[in-house]
Amino acid sequence: MSDDARQLRASDRASLERFGAPMLTTAPTALPSVLARALAFGAIVIAAVCGGLAGYATGALSCSQGCAGTSLASAAIGALVAAVGVAALAALVLRSMSEWADQASVWGRRPNRVPKDPTNDVT
Image (cartoon, rainbow, N blue to C red; front, side, top):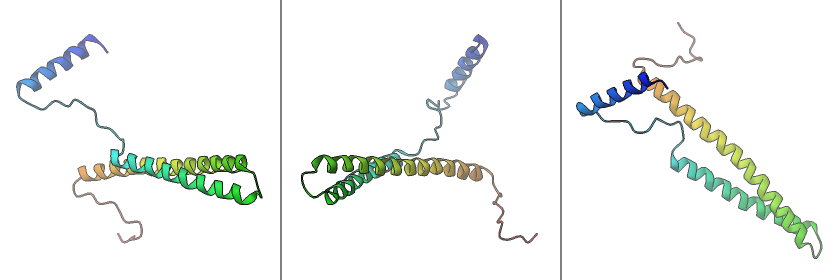
């Protein structure tokens, strides 16, 4: 960044403070809300627990006796597969939520603009 750009920003900041305008201290973000991220994390944990239980049950039922290692290994594999699957879905859902919110804000800034309905082809 050049010295002129820094000086311009400093002068803009001084004029904004002089007129009592609020200063933005953070940039807008495209991250989903904290609640949405916490719910996604909770869903991943629940899926891992359920996958582990299903894997343990599968390992225990497939062996006749003394197969604690097989049951634990199948529990770990089940938990991992379930957690990775739900994590992929959660990432897609969170990404689509942020894109949807971004598109909604664009349409909200354009008054008298309604998206065209592709099913109604009457002109």
